[in-house]
Image 1 (cartoon, helix red, strand yellow):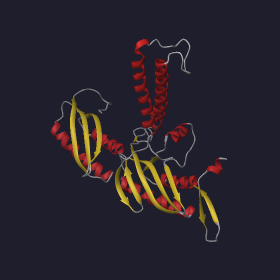
Image 2 (tube, each protein chain N blue to C red):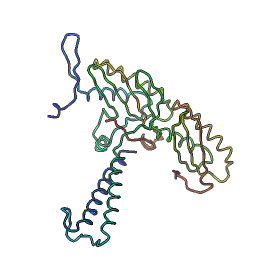
Image 3 (cartoon, chains in turn green, orange):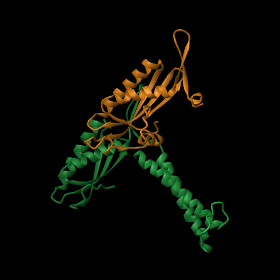
Image 4 (cartoon, one colour):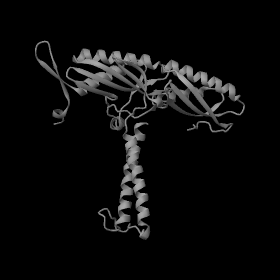
Length: 180
Length: 140
């Protein structure tokens, strides 16, 4: 996530949380809460509890957006090297970017979605691809599998135990789009 | 006032005296050393640092977190690497470079340099970060 995305996440989340808080307070105590804006009072009537519940849900969504935007890298990183002098960790998103790059470079691949899952034996790469109509999918899958295993082993230093490929689309002109 | 709140480390010298070094200084030394390693595309900062950078403010300690305990310290480095390099090789050079720079310039003993690869950057003339994929960092 880039800095601007995180900034937008924080601002948007705070805005959503604040708006839903005012909405919820306005529904429960119409016209009496300190944030009451004259002329903008809600006519919620008997539905005020429903409005309050919806506002509470949006409030939680807003808070969650702020937390996610500000969160650290978490424990989902992959340990490549661990020695006395320190360790080297790689974010799964970095491996995903690499796999996406390799997949896009394969002739016949139009769209790519990647997810990297750490397993007990190593790594599992899950690919969702869109392919050209003139391509032989079994051959493409084999080439893709070998290319990804080779690149990840070379660049990251981790072996990929399994590459799961799902073909989601064939022959659709959606250049530049990505799946998942 | 801000200076009084800065976290500092006191290092004993051979002459029996001591020198105080702010942790920020250690972070800057580590940041410069890490940035000089070939294959390092950029350092990964946090939200505040990113906004500051957008406003034109340079942050040499970006992507560095230093933990000092007595005369020992641990450095965490958050960075993105350039496509085409081997991550273990780049990381090892970063560890060596940071350790050497901090120990030579401050006298602190660096126990660990932990390298966190946050993304891979594909530079195709459209700017370093054009196709970079990163995750949020806890670094500075």
